[in-house]
Image 1 (tube, rainbow, N blue to C red):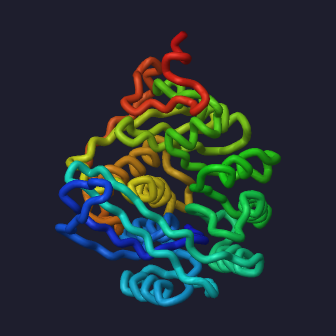
Image 2: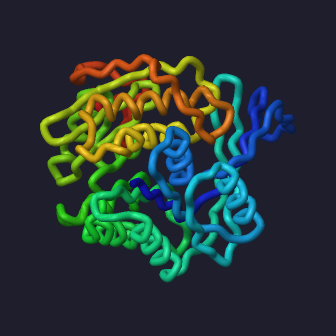
Length: 334
């Protein structure tokens, strides 16, 4: 069983436009409206491939009612935690080459009681050994320290805990005692660079940064690298994989699909998780399928989607390197 928790879900409106020009009037050539938020996206993707999953999320106001109606239509099992504010509505502006500009609202402010309700609902729908997956940005009222507390509480209850967040929420959650850390984190390149405090210019740099987090006590570090593929690090194992997308239409939600692909390989496996290569391949196939779609709601990939997985070529340069904000590329090389 997988239970995703989305403290700050959204109604996502995706508008496809010919080009984005600041200050100009734009006319959309296509529009989609979908239920969203990282945990919702992950749960929907796992649900669509038959995985055993429940989504726990907040909902409030007219947008919350719309969100609930759309999720209900998908058949996804879910539980809503009512909030007094309005669920946010986000807008994605997508250009023909796949360049995506997102405008995200703040969302509702949560009370300590509502945060507790999210956690309690996840525990209610799961048993020891099941996955609880905290996803997305933290709404107002939900502090990074509270996120670290919730991760530790999930572990104390015998759940496997995954965290897909960023900034201080991620940094604090991976900075505690070993028995309070998430079992799985899924940073992207920028988030990994921030966590590690180093520039990432090669696949070897990514592998080293991920392996350091494993040494700190995180069982699995799954790094999405965009066009550079992905790296999976566990004790004694570091793999680099790629899966070319047939076309890049919309990058919004690709990271959520990537995580869903990994988690989908874990459902219905009473004998334990599959090998690392199979888990990484699942993540890559879902991610490649997601960027080829118009909206953020996921359509499952074909199982024959090509995937290449190998021991990292440490000297392979990243097509999208990340330099620490305080250091320029010229300074790095001097």
